[in-house]
Length: 130
Image (cartoon, rainbow, N blue to C red):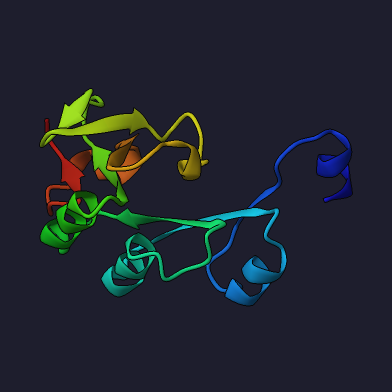
């Protein structure tokens, strides 16, 4: 924290459980991912600390919920099989393999990841074909 302050840099922490600390240390940007729809809904409804950013993770079972979060102004992460499209279902896709700092993406964004390892052959609905 002291090094970040001296270098005039914003400190950020990926953490999901410390909302008390988030409120105490408002100069720190906190962020995380979740598969819990109600938690993502709390984020897009402004019910979580303002220095906390949450990205909803798309999986094979929550496609409707994920696009609901996008339509409400939130962001989702999604895995794509072969390449990242510029847009998917009308929403801008950013390359999430380049950085984990989702709070820099803006609103209504799909944080796209390329399938790696076993995910390349996953046809459960977790990996999107474009």
